[in-house]
Length: 298
Image (cartoon, rainbow, N blue to C red; front, top):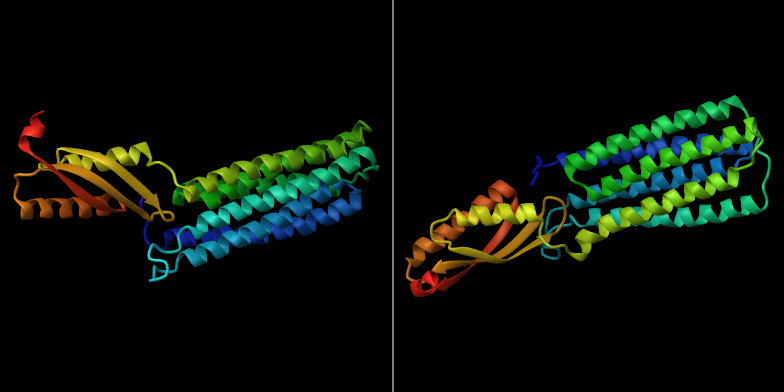
């Protein structure tokens, strides 16, 4: 399990949020102007998608700020799950915008309008693709670095946006060079990509909120460290609770001999708890289940 230096997650998350807000607002203004000039519903739809993305990055920025708050009496496990909630809110916005855009795109299919071609719009769309790819790849790197489902959701959204803009660019070229009005169809495809990315991101953020079974790799590491102690015979009923990134609490039952020295056993279990806390960044509570020596042999 990856353990980061204190403050590094927040720094990454807040930097991702600020870069995302600024870049998406600029793209929104740029694409809105291009959509108005070219009379393209697909480009205009893409512009408002960028505006929703700016809001998503803003939510993520606020969530990382709030997640830094220390635990207190009201919230003894801290505020780390705010990050998961923000990821779900981002996913929800993606789905809402996708549904609205698909409605506009279908109207464009039923009542198509001519798209006005100009080279500035063409170059602008190509530049937008590069910007979105850069943001998406950076977010994916940051998301893996800090193990953040919220940032991973933003990365998926940005990469899908690059693909959406590529589809929009293709329809723009077809309208000019092939005299084929597919603007509404391109907008529909773009909307479907948004719905897919929103649904996928929602599932990724809901899992830790609803509660998951322990990661097999983490469970194996915990059991291995516990069984390395001489008085621990076996391990069972391991439960791992996620209260936010890098905030894990666990409980486990261990079988121990009933004829051992009680003080020695207590010290051994205490040291095992501290060793797991230090090496895996998991706060764990170990419950001993004493058995008689005759039961052990059986």
